Image 1: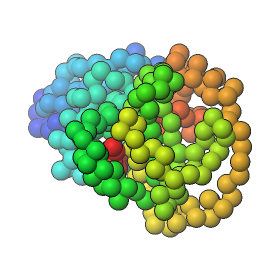
Image 2 (image 1 turned 180 degrees about the vertical axis):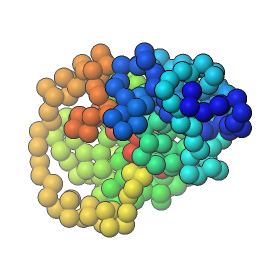
Image 3 (image 1 turned 45 degrees about the horizontal axis):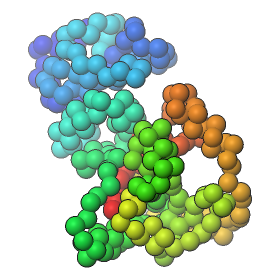
Image 4 (image 1 turned 30 degrees about the horizontal axis):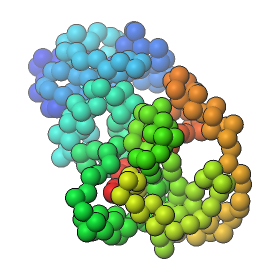
Length: 271
């Protein structure tokens, strides 16, 4: 080891880069590392090898060198440790966290969850209040994700995609969304999802600027009708089911939850 870990006072939420001989990924040309681990205690780290999340003592890591560092926002370190602790059973959530750290998307760790479950509201008034709050937080260009708890197809998609959602669209502002449905591309009011059995959430790119947000107005003018790509959707579903989708590939067509698993978006609000 290049660092005498036993002599260091390492805090939970710190990050360790190292080389793991059993990991299939090739090491970086400049760094020589192929693994990122997260300290969840002073000497215990978690890291993901393939689809398996491992817990090891830092002293057991052997390699040519190791780099340990703290994230720039140290106040988030407890949240980072909590996030990875809670992701021990979901390798896609774990890798989402690693990607988010790598690109500086610390918004992911500023909240307790990123894949929320459907809220159970006590009554209609409670739901109305939650809906108004949800709408108030929306901004142009947010991704809008939905899940219909009464739909078998929606349940199937969310299950195969290993996430909370089965469908997504783009928020255009003024409570209008643009989305691809089985009838083709449509613009419609977000109120079509205002039902207590529908789970809805909004996600925002961590590098979204006001300039980029306003560009959605020009984008919306270019939108044209296109038919639903049934064959592509079927092929993507099959590849997702068998774990053949590469979420690190920037040209890979993402699934609904795959958009989130890439680590560039964070949860804004949900109902």
